[in-house]
Amino acid sequence: FDMKCTVFMVRVSYDQKPYRRYIMETYGAKVHASPSLETEYGRSLLKENKDHPGSLGVAISEAIELCVRSKNTKYALGSVANHVMLHQTVIGQEVRSQLEKVDEKPDYMIGCVGGGSNFAGFTFPMIGDKIRGKCDAEFIAVEPKSVPSITKGEYRYDYGDTAGMTPLFKMYTLGHDFIPSPIHAGGLRYHGMAPTVSLMAKLGLVKGMAYDQLEVYDAAMQFARAEGIIPAPESSHAIKAAIDLAVEAKRKNEEKVIVFNLSGHGLLDMSGYAKYISGTMNGN
Image 1: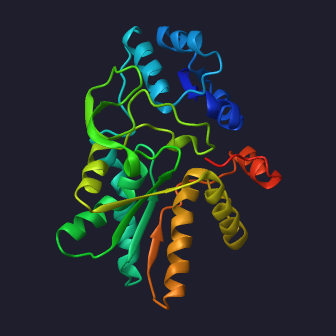
Image 2: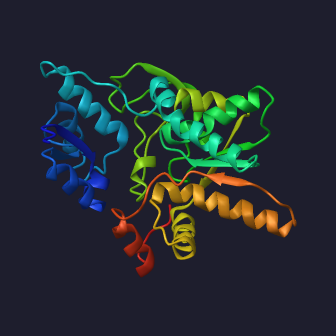
């Protein structure tokens, strides 16, 4: 097995999460920190700022540029597009079946959001049930305070990448040229929200919440020590919301069924945990 491919990895994640890069390189990939010197767009950004932190939007732009100038190469957007939301719903369909087997109905369903595919895959089958009157759950999409596309973005047409090469999407967006601060939840550093998730939020079927990085890591530490699982910083946004809702239910002496998506482990994100434990992590 040999990947034989070129990968543009967001510079912040390239530096913060080197073991992700080493895994890809083990399988034969060539990994570049984005923005890179491999594309005209990358070079233009580095000319303006040699320490540019990069973003998912920038990496997408570089990947598209490399694709269009290469023979026998195709590119498919992998996060916000409708077909991706559809494929991911296998997660939510399984969750729904599991809940049916234990005869439980959720009061809350919670997922972290960056581009939206993780959240959509987890919740859309149940949101469909709610639209049909078969479910009464609240659906909560949790994002970083430093990338608040749902909670503070505008609902309008915008590009899916920073250079403006993709089609326009109608979505909650902070602007395609928005560059997020270098938080450790690299998978959530995206300027916009998937059109389908954005529409659900616009219609009031999805509620957006946002947390600071320090709050999120505090929740991750609580979860790791209680459950024995070290969660990814992205997933820990959902954990933080679940803990807060559980504490609120306890305070009100209410019984609530809270379901959240633990979408990834954090064993390749230990540099973030090291900063949090040492007290050197910034809140943003």
